[in-house]
Picture 1 (tube, chains in turn brown, red):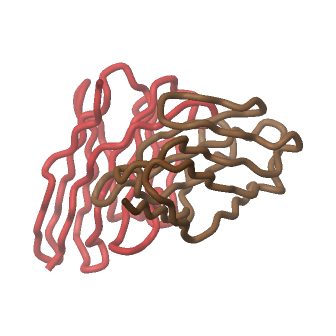
Picture 2: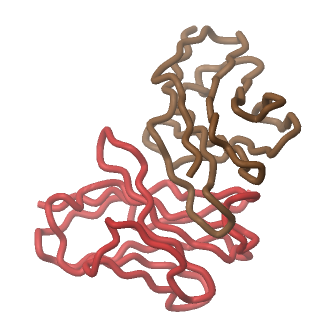
Length: 110
Length: 117
């Protein structure tokens, strides 16, 4: 299974962009890159996912390196509500469960 | 927006008792999951369920655990004889397409906090 590496924690100021990195050097050609987040006292929440091209949605952008060995989740303007644990996950294959690591704990200051 | 609903939000039980945690997945979803999170630790996968049978389970999901979809809407997790170490937040999740999470998103409920005394 492809492994991911994320920093344990990051800090940001409100209304500034946040770039959350994820390394996945053993990724295979068919592995999708998923990002979830977990707000305090809540269940995980889907953020975004992609395969090769950069992806945008209303929550965030996902920038995928050309060699796909790393990706970056971009929050364009952090808010206090974005303080959460962010998980970068590569599902092993279709039909298998998401396995959560420790993720990156993002703190946002006003 | 549709959501996964879990009941109860909190459950307190005595060690050795049976508990049933209930979930109502999103109505057109085909894949169902249970995860748990012990306080301060990672979210851990327990089991996935598709087409009325378990499709995958982790080492945590031993004979004390069972899942069921008793009707067209509910998805339940039963723990037959609870232990102190079963105390955790239990999350139910569902996904739409039935092809697994490689190219689809999971929707999680807000969890049931199980406390075993």
